[in-house]
Each structure stands twice: as C-alpha cells, then as structure tokens.
Length: 407
Image (cartoon, rainbow, N blue to C red; front, side):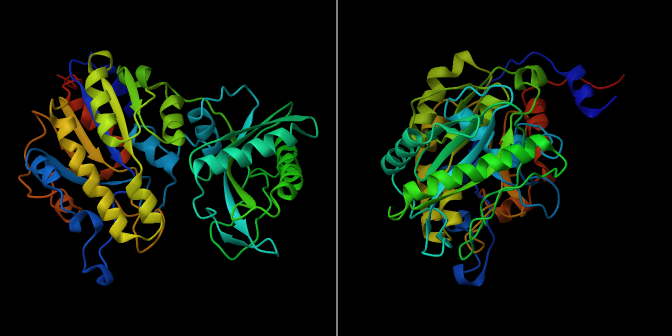
C-alpha cells in the first residue's frame, strides 16, 4: 500500500473549517546589504507576532533539496500533490484561471509582453509592468488580426498587468515545449521546441508557436514599451485527481490573479470571484465559511516585489498583509496555516530553493511560544524542516480528520 492510499483509508469526515493562507514568495535570505534581516524579519507585524505564540512553526522544502520551483509546482505541493509526479504547464493553469474551457488536445501558453530592442534582444521581460488596460488593448489587436495559424485556431485572452494567454486548438497538438523565453534580459527570444524530440504532435505545436510569432511581432512593432512577448509553460492539460476525492474536503479558492485561480480549478476547487484586496478576501472567507471545509487564500505581492529585488516594497507588502489579519482572525478558522509556495529572495530577484516558513495553528498544534513568525523563528519550530507536500496531511491531522493507524 502506498502512502496516499493509507491516508485515504484513515481519512474521516471533516468537522473543522480550514484556511491555508499563502503569501506568495514570502521566504527570503538575510544579507549584509539589508542588515542581515529578511523582509519578514524587518517588517512590523504585530498580528502575525501574536499568532506565532499560538502555534507551531517550521520550514518546508518546496520540491526537493536544491530545486527551485515555479509557481505551479510550489502550489501543487501545498495542495498535497507531489510536484514531480504531477507536472502541469503554466499555460494550462493560466488559461483555466482566466475562465477558458480547455478542450482535449488544446495547448495553452502563458505569455507576457516584453520590450525588444532593434535587434530583437529582450531589454525588459515585463515591458515595465504595463497596466492591465494596455494589455487588453494589445491582446484585442492580436486577436482581431490572428484567428488561425496554419490549420489551428488561436485564442488570445488578456490577464492582469503584462500577462496574457494563448491557446492553440486543432488536431494533432501536444506539449510540452521548451519556453520561448530567455528568462533574463540581454538575450533574444529562443524558439520553442518539443521536450520530447520524437513527438510528431509536439513538433507540429512548435511550428504553430513559431508561426504565431511570425504573425504577431510585426503587429507590435512600434509599440512602446510592449513591442514583443514571451511564451512559457506551453503544454496540454493533464489528468489530475480532484482535491475533494483525495482529501474529503470541499474546497474554495480566494485569489486575485488568474494563475492561482487556475491552479485551484485544476484540482477541483471552487473559484470565488470578486474580492480584489486581502482584506476583502478575508471578509469573503467569513461570508462563505458555512459552504466549504477548506479555503485557499492567496496574496501575490511579496513574490512580485521579491522578483523586482525591492526589499522595502516586499517588507511593506508583508506589513499590509499583517494590517488586514484582524479581519480573518475575527472568527479564527479551526485550523490555520500561513505559509508560502516558495521563497523569492529580493537579493536573488527570483524564485529560489530556500525552504519557506510555515505557521500552523489549531487547538491541537501545540505552542512553540515563539515571539515572531520569521525565517529565524521557523528554524526553531517544532515542525522542523519537511517537504511541502506533507503540509496538507498535517492540516488534516490538526482538523482531527485522520483515524488511528493500526491496533
């Protein structure tokens, strides 16, 4: 019997309300330039500090030691799915989050506008983080001019800020492809290629991506700053077990950005639309509390500012989250986990392999009696260091959902 089968045998009906609150990219590293403090340590967080005294802390390895995760693997691990066994293209996640109904054989790509110089070298991977309204106008232009590439239909949908989605719909298509994204400035856009060079369907899909670039880039020429675009996570939708079947929990998602809604939808969570701020998300948790057992609540901004290398802005984002916490704790969830999907250290300006901190609070979690919720405090916590995919099982245990194993 494998471990998941054992957990399924031990799972009892839920009688608790659970909230998993994810501060995207929260984890960081202490360096001399920042006074040997992380943004979380430097932030004024009285409400997180008060909660830290009531629960257990630890740190989580998002995938495996030394592996830097994308947002997809980071969140799937939090949902209890081994991110190595369940690999999902970012395009699929983003497309679902934007409300697109993917069909069998569709290939989706997560795209974002960028800035190119006269030699088509990427000078800004995010085109200065253009406003959503500008992204919508550009996507409308592309969608109006590009209906098909060869025999495949092309569907373009704007997201938030500089992000959008491209879906190719036709016969004989398949991913995954390598990214049409150099992942740093100073390089040209690479061609997307089949991950499996023997796959004829993937070869056809790569040809479609190249054809799309050939049609789209001239339409953006002369635009400023968004005169190009990058594509990544080019893949088809895989089969994945539903969250409710796996854990016996009716789950809901409170997220603002499409990708995280898509991740939740991928595993069968209900997307709750409307809230745009973390305080509004917490208010909606109370309004929907009776209808669901499990709530995934996502807060994007620590990751955004970590990727910008902006220590001060990341610190401020954490403080703004802390200021909204009393809305959530007005009526505490029976089990509350506060954590991240991965670390996004400001000195690195990107995701990293460093274990992210986690705080787990319930009547049964035990009290580590730590004064603050920080990376340093988490290092001393009773949860120790463990793989993120096990967090959901600790949550189930704290919700008294796991029966005794053996006589």
